[in-house]
Amino acid sequence: MDYTIAEMKIQDLQEIKNCLDTEYDNFWSYQTLESEINSESSIYIIIKNNQNLILGFTGIKVILDEAELMNIVVKKDFRNCGIGAILLKNIIKKARELEIKKIYLEVNDTNLPAINLYKKFNFKQIGIRKKYYGNNNGILMNLSLEQKRTLITLALFRTIQSNFKSQ
Image (cartoon, rainbow, N blue to C red; front, side, top):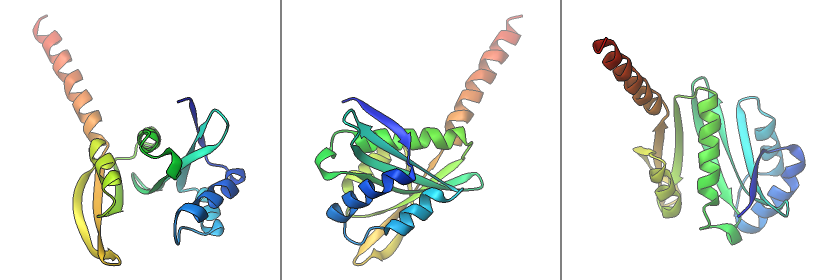
């Protein structure tokens, strides 16, 4: 599938809001969405297909060197096609560019597709919020972005050390 990743803009909001209203109960209002994308601490991206149709979006709220994954939303007709993974990969890339050290999220414990996606990207469960979603629990997860940098630094150090010893 051909797709484009772009920063979410004000002109995208009505299409996104229409999608949310038909597919989700009690999601954010237009004003909340507008406030989120206008916030200097928020980064939201969208994914569009080659017909310029928005298929989904995700966003993070940055607090110092940490971020909270606010949501990943994919239109129902386009789920189970890897779009959530594309969005997550791209928002993690943005977080790395901003030198974010950890990304936190919470997810309904009944949302197994989302939980499995987060685990695939190495998010780890760090806690539970009992009855956070009515009768369902919220699972708290995080992803350390320092790990990769540490492993790369360690590999570089070992290479330099090996080269130094051989001289």
